[in-house]
Length: 456
Image (cartoon, rainbow, N blue to C red; front, side, top):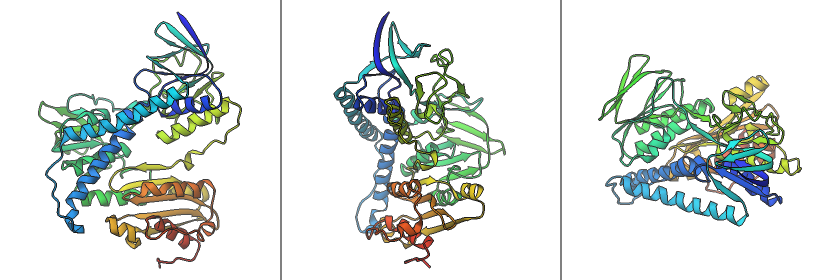
């Protein structure tokens, strides 16, 4: 057995793992990253990047369909699934090559193989042991399913959906959260008949109810079917189709069933328990500094309970690298992390929903909704939607919520407002360029400051 010693060993090379490694090398540490698949993890290879490439293809298809409305003569002849796959894989390949080059330039040792945590801050990979003064766990997540619902054949997870080499005619999406509505949006743009089944009573149920209702209206207008507030009972499939029976007796049939019921922490069988790393329902338990129950062992990303987002993983990786280096970094609260669902229309939010704000602050909460119908740029690009801002009475902004095409590009301003505890009166004097969709945020800030311009 050969032993290798580093200042820091990172188990997992996804978003959180490689961010930790890069920041640690900037701070003078020697680092090894152990990855059983390919660095970049789920986000780069099977999640964020490839799905957003599909969503861009879907957007182009929708623009071609509506081209006559803006005076462009065009027609959509169809979706070439093989060409779409080549486009998607090309994007991923470029980003992967860039990441490999970056890690090499930083002097980071990348170890290919499945690692297992040892009790003495070591990670075993085959016959080798990589030992660090500190170890960071960043093993990511996997697609969940439901009891009695087996994946295979025409029953897919998001990974299987990405691998499809055809455009299905009919699809059922089980789960109305981020992953479910994004795939539903893509497939509908590609021409499929789509039905979403969600056990809770609304789509994207973690968002403010105004965004949920807005997305439901938009999806109905697009012809996306919705069965809300009902659970699945059973699934059966043949070589040609899949059938989903709901608890209310409804039977739905389609070419494929996408199971999009969330992601679980990938922590089983990796030696965590034996090494003294405590877990709860699979998630690694950490303190407010992301320290696990074992000394000098830290955890970041999807294995830490909370928002499972790549940019959260980045932030946590940077935080831990700086914490290990003794820099005393400032932790970013979960509520200040922006969230985006890249469907058509997009949903973007940061901070507290109105319901959460009222639960925390009582009735001393003010909200304002600005309809994108009053925004010239939104009218030009043909999107409906709204901006909703939540503040405490005479106090700071605690939540920003948006729905509409391209609004994900606006959420950073919302994060600044929430993160800096800005009052609408602080933001009202700031100028938003005209015509831009950012003016809709400006209008909401103006209204809450008591001096609306384009709103009554």
